Length: 155
Length: 155
Length: 155
Length: 155
View 1: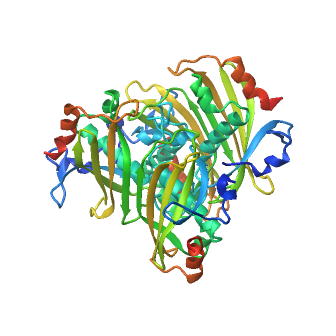
View 2: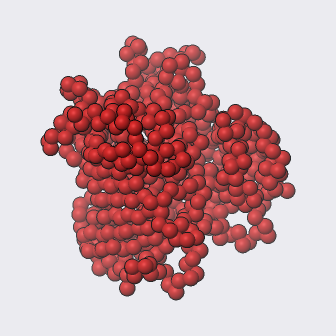
View 3: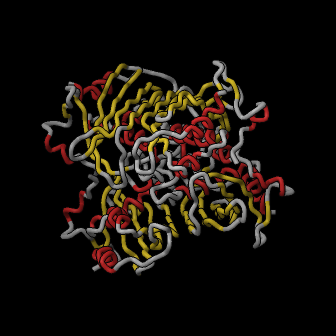
């Protein structure tokens, strides 16, 4: 299992960054297929890393995203943004940090930071905005128990 | 729409290769994101090209694959093979050729050739084997009208 | 070759959208592998479509992106954004529109619209910001002939 | 870091499967973006998993693949095959097993098994064949120290 090696440093599953926000973090590595002919990770992969970040965020808050879908709720991406600061190379290890930026019954916002393994320098940052829909793609509201689970890291 | 520029040369939607097999062909181009740090198209993309080849094969046989799924039949990949002969570079144009290799109510086999645009030199060849399932992933049999549509290019 | 079917409607290689901006447009289709288990195109693919949009934009301005790299200039993505309005489904045909938003010797900005094939309804919109680097990843300036070629669609 | 949880069970970095072959194994999880509209992992991803398997194989043999490339040797895929036995679903954990099937100075063959986490049931198996080239894509021979490193798991 992908496990944050630094998780042992944290009293719990969250940490506090410079600005005092709670986040979860875990380690990833760049796959060969994620590089392009510039020799660095292609820009689209960051949005895939943001997504496995959300998956990990939900899991660590005891509400795995697959269970959210199993209960009939879908967090559909309506906005995605990434600012790229440093390149990532094949097999480079880095940390993905995930923050719950905002949550209401109808909308969830996550923000993300990718940082270098050793010095924790910023590689990229971004955010995604999600609306809540049911299995028929109609907008609906997240039930209170999912909202409080997702909020757990914030408190 | 992606259209084979050479299709105008063919009396119908199929052509005959050296070995006398019927096939459909159409043109594709290598996307930047499909290259890797070796500067060539990554090996996994060939299986994506095979797949858009199947989509095109079905469409030209008047049985679009989405209609096959809409009728409750799924062609699930159980085997995939590719032999790589020449590299493909960013923005390189090439042709995808698709052959129906074998078809029974429970199993369909396609083979593929990727060839250079000008001299039609072999870039890669391969095949996929598919079993037929229903929407609940249980094996089932393709109805006769789908089989005859898929066979149309062969006759 | 992927060709805009509607390109025949345009006097030249550009068109004018509602706001009076020049853009190029061409048609694409959703690949099966681009869908996810929600049954729609996955959010990361839009950034791949933006990229093939840039490739097409450069080609239609007679300065293919591969030639830009061959001359030693790289347009490195430093920012990417997408707003998703409507879902895209497997095999759905749509148009990609590419606008040159801003260009200086050191920075290039493109914006994009994805619209439905028939009614030209907005599926998604976004932008990317690029800095110019040389082959050693050092920032540098685009030469005047590349800038004027890229600007051609604007005038 | 992705770490095999079961690695602790092994005296060293390799294990012995039923047929008595040495292999390395590690755990992976299915990403959301790796699913398609059938609700299972798309067939092309298996070739990406095979590849991160090779990366891991080289690392555990103390010759990271990026070091092989840094020394001027490239293992270019000339053949890839996969047989799919069971579907993989979003977030499902599984093991990737990598075997060095054959190695000569000019050619390297790996085989792979994907197995379920708990019962170690076969999900998929396959192989890849690689020729050795230099940075100019000319075929060449692997030096003895790389061959012996890669062979280490076999003995």
